[in-house]
Image 1 (cartoon, rainbow, N blue to C red):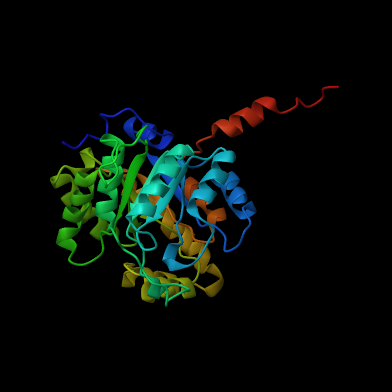
Image 2: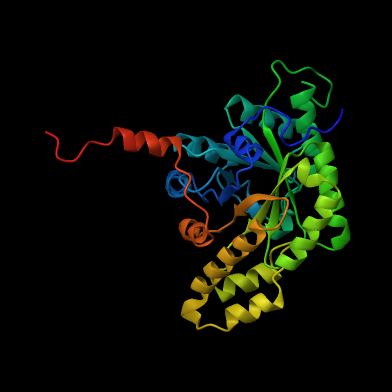
Amino acid sequence: MTDTPVSASAPKSRLQAALQAGQFAVTAEIGPPRGANVNPIRRKARLLRDWIDAANITDNQSAVVRLASWAGCLVVMQEGVEPVMQLQCRDRNRIVLQSDLLGAAAMGIPNVLLLTGDHTRFGDHPDAKPVFDLDSIQLVWTARTMQQQAKLLSGRELKPAPEWFIGAVENPFAPPLKWRAQRLGKKVAAGARFCQTQFIYDVNIFRQWMQHVRDLGLDKRCSILAGVGPIRSLRAMEFMRQEVPGMYVPDEVVRRLRGVPGDQVSAEGLKLCSEIIAEVKEIPGVAGVHVMAVSWEDAVPEILERAGLARKPSETTAQAETAAPVAGGD
């Protein structure tokens, strides 16, 4: 079966429609809480809904137990935000992975981001047994098989077949750098139609990666969303450098943030993030940005506004404005 160009298939989500229309898309990350309470997700969704095309609901990121991604997706949908359900291989075998994909489609979750997942040794249950029955490339291929061939991995038919906009992740900064675009190519061949990258703090390396992506023609078959995020403190920066797998923070960023007074680090980190967005926006082949403001979602609107990106009023907001009472009426 041949790969489908980004613009060839009918859109399955508002995010896909925006990308196919050539709009510069914005997605953002919402981390579910560490408790049985959806109110934090509602607050973040309301904060972000006028600025983004879709919100990623993370799936036990960093191998830390949180509220399930699918539950968070249903909540943000109630708040007028289109979700991207993350699904990782670390905790599930192929039976549960396929079951969760079917559940997402049945509940109207239109976008899925499929990834391998951080090892359990990095999280709050380091003794937990990891599964990794499939890897991310195999999971993307599985999702495409379910969607396009209406079959499970067992060969059993699906009636009806599920529908999603399938995404993957990639890290342009992981060695060996020269093979990272080829790795994305495997995910595109498997069925990925959008890709969100790891945090970008070295735009030059990312620019070189994008050149490789364009040389392979991958930007025509997969929408690239550049991963960005603000650094809030020196402590957070050191954690990212030393503890987060696959993270690369160059020395020039370290010097810049250490060169300002302590009470100005967060403002400088916010400014840096906006500058990076403005830079990557001009790189050919970049279709949008994915903003990861971990535990700092309140900063996302300011970051986007500083980077020159306009608000995107949602249908929910428009309905609320239309229904608002007119001042001065009886």
